[in-house]
Image (cartoon, one colour):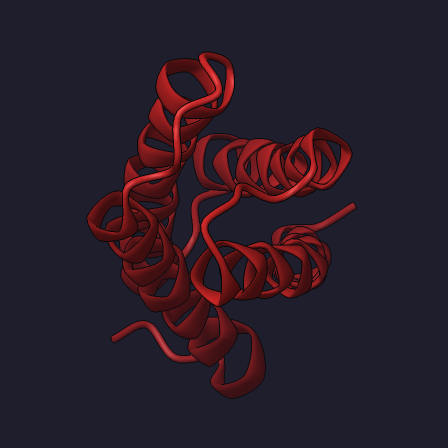
Length: 124
């Protein structure tokens, strides 16, 4: 498997994770309750798989600078997601809107950068 294919698969994993994330955001902002645990776990699993594959490609083969920045943003998003899950969801506290937005912003920016690399082959 080459780096380009790994970036493509990683982007696909993040796309599916983003669909779950958007669904969870709609649930959270549509009412005063948290999304179901199974959806949060599936979202986290897919995103973690994407991060792992992207990190492997970066360290094993080297990737363009924009993909490296995307990886950093995804790691920031992962920290936010872990806090949302372990601090709030685990303790049955309502997810704070500001942290949900911060988590989503980092992930969306990372996805857009990764998508640019995959679709445009750009190094930025």
